Image (cartoon, rainbow, N blue to C red; front, side, top):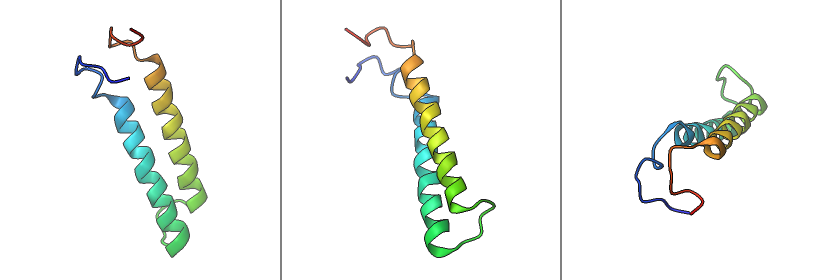
Length: 70
């Protein structure tokens, strides 16, 4: 549900989700092209999953908007 208060559109949850997507792409690059970037491709995938879990927890516990649920 889209909110009109404009406070819900920003925040750490969106940043965490964007970082999750970036690390997922990084995981694919490391796995497919055998690039050495500190971690293996599967470890980058685990980082991506953890960031997505943190983002979803933040979205579920976000109490900034008073219009959610109405």
